Length: 457
Ligand code: FAD
Ligand code: NDP
Image (cartoon, rainbow, N blue to C red; front, side, top):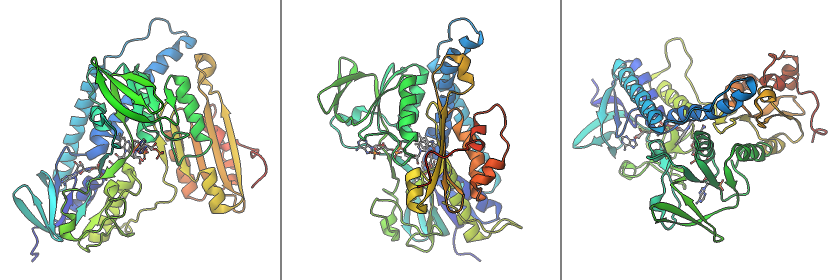
């Protein structure tokens, strides 16, 4: 008979924790999960889902504008921000309930409150202590703001969804995923958006053609994107916020959104008490099996600060469960493949990408061939909009394998998902060439790119 209260104790009910707890419960092991906030974590409550709902809302503005060229007449409708917020909140509450049902259906005991480790097999939540054979830390991360005078006047992505009133003038600080997405979204919703990025180009780490292309498209759409631009201080004056830039200029805003990265939630977790080691950057250190320095404690998702994406946290959660409790009947144990992780940035237009940037491919493979096109999508021949689409393939010259695929354009995330499967299967450029297009689509361009941009090199 087990001497532990539970076989598996999960700390954190976000993307990774919920998936791991549910899968473990379905294996018949005794599972508990502690969550200090709302079930579903960042993605469901203040991340992917509400962000995508607001992105849909923002896209209507473009559609209303484009509709005139297709014969539609009349003034564009106006946004009822309060209704959008209320409908989003209702949908998120529904999802919170779905998560609760799924977990309870799998026999998981839900414990509400902040959990901390007492020792390698004990977790404390409030005044109660629970012992477990295995513990999984899936506590995610939170926004991180650089120290700036007046920084307490800024908001983060946690607060942006419920701003009241609607910010007519929004300043966004940062040039990563969150900054670019929210600059696009609030621009589409009707705010006057100024985005300030300290670097020379947005979206560090993305392909060298993608970065200036999206910057141009965002500017064309109305975002006042300023590069090499840094905030000196923030102040509140006469009911408005003043953003003092290094260099002297002062901007006026109704809200200032800082999107300057995220840090792992490792504080007040009792990691030291349990002997769990952190990396130099403050994330929980894990090995290839997601084990921490303490054999009974595993960690997954954003708290390990490797790849901060929901599908990665889900995949890591399932791998841990298979590793600890065995795979599902008839299935091999899962491991996480960190190669060729597709990702999208929900800017307007979207970015979709999988595999190497051109620069990475040159480093990894030596000689590469690059295929690129940028064009006006069919829809915009009548819409009057000047938005363009970029598509790019990077091919390893020796093997002919497509090792990088990048798109900026409508629904790029939807398009790239399918191509990611082909690339995981090792598709060569010859396979792309022999695939028939679906006409007329933008995606067909990926299988009709014939001539490389210059010779292989
Ligand atoms: P989380 O989902 O953050 O869950 C951690 C949970 O642990 C939280 O619920 C927290 O309350 C709880 N917790 C923390 N400490 C304790 C404690 N001591 N005791 C009990 N509970 C605790 N990813 C995508 O793939 N696509 C997207 O479009 C996307 N958009 C995003 C947009 C935004 C604005 C943000 C911020 C993130 C976005 N992400 C997106 C990233 C994605 O949300 C995260 O990678 C993902 O949620 C990580 O899951 P997780 O399980 O590691 O942590
Ligand atoms: P990112 O790491 O993507 O971007 C952070 C940005 O802030 C960078 O432009 C960085 O500049 C800038 N920055 C960092 N420190 C400072 C500073 N002190 N002063 C000024 N600027 C600074 O983080 P995000 O917060 O945007 O997102 C966190 C993660 O969440 C993402 O990396 C992604 O994994 C995930 N996410 C995924 C989404 C999706 O899948 N669609 C959407 C949203 C988030 P520099 O480049 O110069 O370092």
